[in-house]
Image (cartoon, rainbow, N blue to C red; front, side):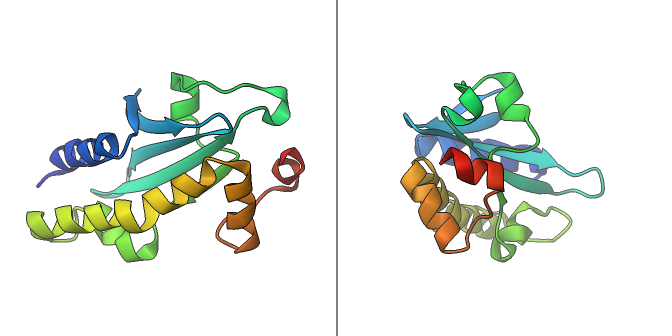
Length: 145
């Protein structure tokens, strides 16, 4: 499997888990937040980095929409990545059978992406993530909550 095929499989899984596709990324929104997934291709090797960006509606007196600027922005109010456990799934310099890569990608969604984004789609969930040390909130973002 090459990186292009992988991105297609990632997209299928994202859509199957209620993420919408836009501008080369995927997003899910609630009335309180927008969660964005972006696979960023490395310039240093054949691998992707997963960016999970959370935008809080009303923060800094703004309403956010899933437009190109938001999807492609380098950071959200909260930004997270894949966990080290799943880094190899995104690395095509590391040899892996296609079926194993696909199974690990499914686990990445089920064990990390979905639990994280589901909690981060609410202000209460973001506070919970911060209290558990799973995310760092910048002081200005903390004030907005």
